[in-house]
Length: 425
Ligand SMILES: Cc1ncc(COP(=O)(O)O)c(C=O)c1O
Image (cartoon, rainbow, N blue to C red; front, side, top):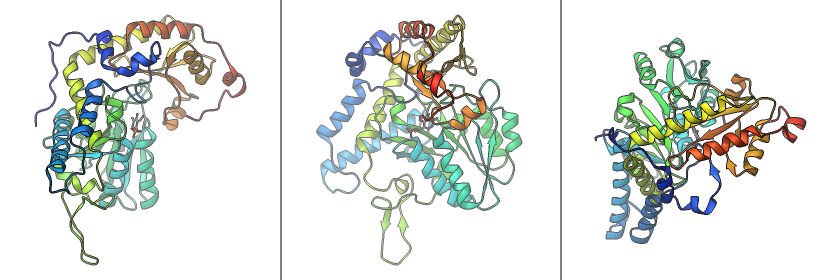
C-alpha cells in the first residue's frame, strides 16, 4: 500500500475557510478552542460519512448472508484499507480497530505481554509517557515480575538515543515510547529508536496519539513494530482507534478479548480455532461507523495537504513561542518550536495553572491545565502542572493574539493562594 503523500506544492492552509468545515465552531464562537490535544472537532466530511453509513448501510458485519450486511462489511473493509494506506501499512490486515490508544495499549500489554514477557525480563518506557502508555506496562510488570525501565527525558523534552540505547539489552522484551509528547509537544526520534530496539531483537511500540493529527505518519518508514492512535484526536469520532502491527508480529499475537467474530469454530472442549489477525483481535461487533468516520478524517487531512497542515502548525507554534517571549513571567516548557507538533506548554510564574485556566476560560479561551495524565513527567519537570495550548487546522493567528493578551492579565487566584501544590487532572 502506498502511504499518504505530502503535497509539496500545496497552497497555505486558510484557517478562516477551514473553519466552515466544522459546524461546532459556528455554535461555540467566539470560543477560542485550544485544547485539541484532548480532542478535536469534527468536520462535515466525517459527520456526513458516518450519517451516510447509518442511513444507507447499517447492519452487523461479517455475519449476515444478505446484501445489506455485505455492504456494511464492505464499508469496514474499505475503512481499514484507507486507514492502513494513510499510515503506510503494507496491508489493511495490519490494522486492528480498537476503541482508542488506551485500548490499543492494553491490548498489546496483554497479548504481547503474554507472548514475550516473564519474570526477570525488562520493559522499557520513557519518562514522558501518558498514563495510557505507562500503566498497562506497569501492570504487566506487576503481574509477571518483569522490571520497568524508564528512559530519562532531556532538558529540551525529548528522549536521547544514547539514553535509550543505554537502557536496552537482550532481556528487554518490549520498548514503548511516545512519538510526540502530549505534555510538551516535543518529538522523539522514532526511526533511530526503532533501529536501536531492533538491534536487541526488541519490538518497538509507539504511542502516536499526538502525532497522527500533525504528521504524515509512515509506520514502515519509522520502523515501528506497533503504532497506536485515537480517531478523536485526528478529527475523527470518539470510540475508535487503531493498533497497527507489523504483519510478522501482529499475526502471531494471541487473542485479547474473545468472543464473536474471533473464531472459525468452537466446541465445548476442543482447542479453539481462532481466525487470523486483525479480526482475531477485534472481538464483538466493531464500531463500523467509527471506522468509516476515521477513514473520512484521515482523507480530510490528506485533502488539506500535509505540507499545508505542517506549515500551519509551525506558524502557530512559533508565533505563540515568540509572543510569549515578550510576556513577563510566562515561560514555555521544553522546546516545542524545534520541531513543532501543535502543542505548547506554558507556566506563569507564581500562578497555579488552574488559576490561569480559569482566567482564560472567563475570556473565552479553552486550554488544558494540570498534569495531562502524565503526573510522572510533571514530577520529573518539578512542576505542579502546565497550561497546555494545542492547535488544530481551524485555529487562527488572532486566537493566538487573544491568548497572549489574556496571559498578560492573569493574576493569582484561589488555587495559588489556598492550594498551591494541589493537582488532580
Ligand atoms: C500521548 C497520548 N497517549 C494516549 C492517550 C490516550 O488516548 P485515548 O484517551 O483516546 O485512548 C492520549 C490522550 O490524551 C495521549 O495524548
